[in-house]
Image 1: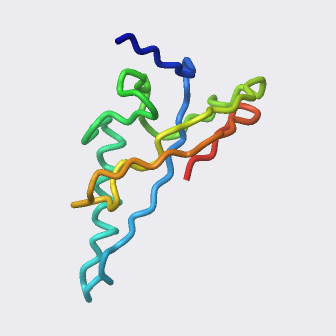
Image 2: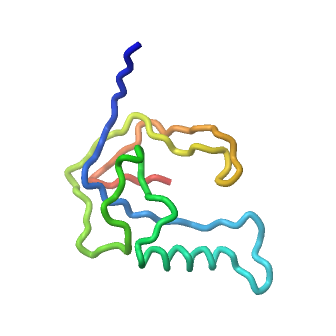
Length: 117
C-alpha cells in the first residue's frame, strides 16, 4: 500500500532556544542541582559539546550552528505560514514517562518567528 506524507520544511532555520530547569523536589541546603545543570549546559555550549543534536521536527533537519546568540542573526520577516500539525511532546513525563505523543495544530510562524512553548 502506498503512503504519501505531506511536510512543511524550512531551510536555514535559526533556533533561539531558551530553557528552564525545574526540580522535582526543592533543593537541599548547600546543594542546588538546577544551578549545577545550568553550569554544565553553559560550559558545553561554549565548546559546542551536545548530549544530542538539537532539532525541531525531523532529525534530518539539524542546525549548522549551535552556540551563543549572534548579533548578526535576525528573523526573515517575509515568512508567514501555518504548520497544520506539529509534535509537541512525546512522553507523559520528561523522565521515565510513557509514550504518549501530543500534537499542536495550526502553529503559526509570523514575521519569521514561531513561539513554541
